[in-house]
Structures are given as C-alpha cells and as structure tokens.
View: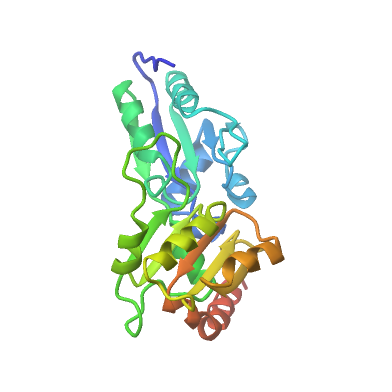
Length: 263
C-alpha cells in the first residue's frame, strides 16, 4: 500500500498506555485521551484506560494479537494519515511504551515521511512494571547488575541474524522476555544450551498490573511442563534470573502498598 499525504491540519500523538493499571498512565497521556478527536488503539490496552477516552472521540481498534490481526501495519499508518488530515488531535494508543517492541519507531518514520507532525508520549513498559507488581526487582545489588529486554516473537521476514540467545544467556544476569510464551520451549532450550543452569528461576506473569494478574514460578527445567499443566496462556512477560527468588519476600509488601494507595 502506498502511503499518501497532503497538507495536514492535525497532529498524531503516539501515546504509551502502560501495561494496564490506569494508575500507571502518564498525566500527558491522560490529558490527550480526554481531548482526542480520534483514538486508534491496540488490543492490549485495558478497558480501564479506554474508559478515559473523550466520549465524543472516534474510537478505532487496530490491535494485533497472534493470528488475529485486525489491520495491517500499512493500513494503520494510512488510517492515521487520513485522520490527521481531518482532525486536530489524533491519538495512536499503544500498550506499554511506543518505542519498546511497540513498532512506534516504524509508525513515526512513516508518518513523518508523509508530512504528519508526530509527538511521542512514553509509557511505562511492561518489562519494568509487571515484574515489580509480582515483587520482582529486575536489578538488585545482591544478585543482578544487568538486565536484557528481548522479544520472544521474531517477525517473519525480519532482519537477520536472529536473536543471539547464547550471548544474552552469558551476558545478562536478568532476562525479561516480551511475547515469548508461544516460543517458550525453543527459548528455554536455547538458554539451557548456552549454559544457563536447569535450576535457573523463571517467572511468567500474565495480565500484569491488572486485577486478573496471574503468575507462574518454575525453573528452566520445569517451566514448559508447568505451562502445559496450568494451561498458562499469553499475554505474558517472562523474567529469568536469581531476582525471581525475591518475589515471595517482596510481593506481599508491594501488594500491600498498592492496596493502601487505592484507599
């Protein structure tokens, strides 16, 4: 599809919605949702955040879930161009942060090439917030001074080489994997082959920061069987490393803090 452009009247705002808890949405993001004329939103944006959208705004679902793509990426960008030619405030609402595995960089480049003014409003990324809500600090002075964020879902036809799991296994004390549940067995095999011990702790956290948050704790040796037994499903963040063992100690405190903040 050819992306078309003309003189524009509006701006497109790439807004990060965060991982789901509406309390994690930035003040800038909230203000834009309340004044938006058009909001094009992703599948993983929570209902609580969608409820903040200006009631008069046009709402368009453009979410992408595995096997359930509602719009192609080029169609989404073309839609944003067309809406910016008609309206002053167009929000592209993306789960987490637009520039962390959110294709925000691609959308921004295409919009700018079409002559559209774009502003990025960062969001709290799931790789930081979701482990925190499970009581897992992704760095800790006693056991982790490095963290790697990696996607577990490589796009078909993407650039090569593919993810260097061996280098990640050897070079980082904490590994946070986005969108990795479908390929979990292969990822675990690669990490074990690279030298990570079978006893290395791993946590899977589904719908993190939301009321329906669900957690699964295991080791690299046991996690694939545990996922099958629990029928644990996406969307989920995976955290691998010794920091996972801190969850039983810290999760109760973090939960209590959240409960206090809601009263």
